[in-house]
Picture (tube, rainbow, N blue to C red):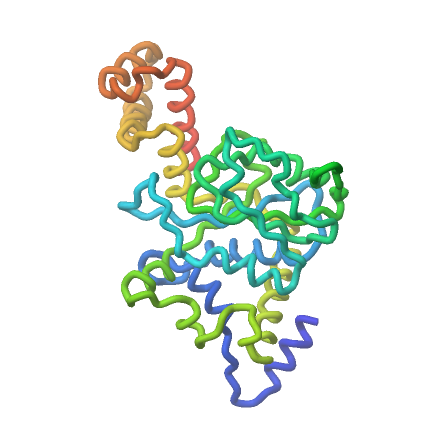
Length: 327
C-alpha cells in the first residue's frame, strides 16, 4: 500500500503537495541550532510506527514517553511545556481508537482506584497526558508488558496482552525510576524546543499558523493533507517493522543528567561526584567510602543533613552509571 501511494504521488507531474504532518515531526526533532537531528527524527518515526497498530513483539513491548528536551538554563522545578508533543498522539487518534487519561492524577501517594476507568475494551491507544515529576510509572508495569486491567465501579475488565492497547505518556519532566524493570518498559523520545521558541519569539506563533492555518487532524485538512499524513505514517510503520521492534536505551546525556538532578536534588553535587570519579580514575588508588561521605557532608551540609550514607552511595553509583554510558 505504501508503494502504491508513493508511485501515485510520483506520477503526478509538477506537483509538490503540502506535507504539514511530516514538517511538524521534523520540527519536533530540531536541535538548538534549528537543524534536524537525524537520531531524534528516527526515534519519533519509530514511536509513530509502533503506536499505529496493535501488533506486539511480546519481548519488546514499551511505553512511549514524549518528554521535553532539556536545555541550559531550564529549571527542573518549572513545568514549561509548549513543545507540541501532545499533538502526536492526538493526531494518531485519527487512525487508532485513542483514550486520553489525565496524568496529573497518577502521582505517587495518590490512591486512584480507577486510573483507567474511561478506557474501553476497544481502546487501541492509551494517551496519558501531562504527567508530573511525581508520576508513579512503576504502578503500571503490568499494563505495559502484561494484560491490561481496567478497574471500574463494581467490575474489572481485562484486555489480554496480545491485543492490549499501546501506551504513550506526554511529560515535561523525566520519568523517574532506575534499573532494568524501568528501562525495558520505556522508549524515551525527546522533543525539541522549535514550537516553544516560535511561540515565545514570534508573539504566540503556534503549529496552527505555521502549518497552513489548519488544526491538525481536523476537517480543516483537505484530501492532500490526509494523503500525505497516511503516507508518512506508512513510512514510519515500515521503519518500525524493519527495526523489528523498539530498541532499548538511547536517551541523551541531557535527559540522563536532568533525571539525576530530580533524583539527587542538587546540580552542584552531581558535578562534585563527576570530579570525584575523574580524580579516582586518574590516581587508581583505593579510597575508603567513609572519606567520600565525610567530604560530601562537609560540602553539602544542608542537603545531606537527613540523608543516610546508603542514599549518598546510591547517588554516587547512579552518576557513575551515567559516566560509564558515555555521558
